[in-house]
Length: 254
Image (cartoon, rainbow, N blue to C red):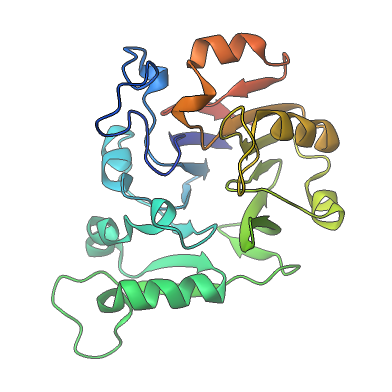
């Protein structure tokens, strides 16, 4: 299984428009972060988790010519606003499968009604196959099982996903012991670590490290990173040996 980190930034990305923060001015490519997303690939399958406003650029940068579906963690714009850019895949492949909580689907139907229209579809509009996700109901993607992991982004329910030995969580602030049991035994964990200061809806760095201690994966990659966490290379040196900052276009194999 191959994991491609398409984007590792927070909702504004790094650099932030108009910011003179030192991290935003950094010349290090690892300090430049598109909106958060990963692609999980095995055999001939490519599944993308979240489809933010940088989706087109991420697909071009990584030379992606086909996808088998998109899994949505939640409905916020930095995770969904790129859905129109599935059009090239739709033109070649037909309806694109999407997997999401029914609340997220309702939000997408409202914001992108032309994609979900069943009648009088506008020529050139993409179309999707909707698969609803329910907690405690694993589902099939390709020839693998995907286990939804429920967490909360402040008060908003979000889904993470475990696919074989890889678990992906983002925009998490709280998660129950019952859900953590679903993650135990995972080899590679990806989870959000927004900044060093506390935040109302995201793990900060210390909370993310505490979460890693509870889960005990073999290796962890932090994502959904803001400029205020600091320079990539400096933060990386301060982390435990089995914990790393992910960066855009990082590829790992499990």
